[in-house]
Length: 91
Image (cartoon, rainbow, N blue to C red; front, side):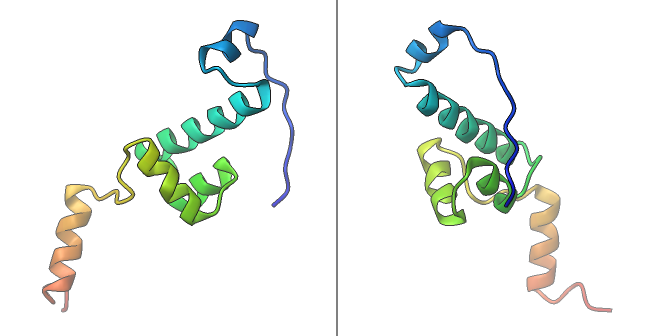
């Protein structure tokens, strides 16, 4: 995976809000963004893990820390899966 660095401006008081050093704060921002984007179904689990800089297993652990379900089923997708499991999707 290639990486690109972008500067970001944050007020100095932001670091004390989470009681984190600047590198720890930035990492926490990556985690929060990846979890939020995953929960909003904007990115897949694999992509969110990549954004967070974690393995998929570690990302699943992170989801638990944020109290976010690792299973993201819409009612429509769940219906489709149930139809498939019952064999009702066959021609």
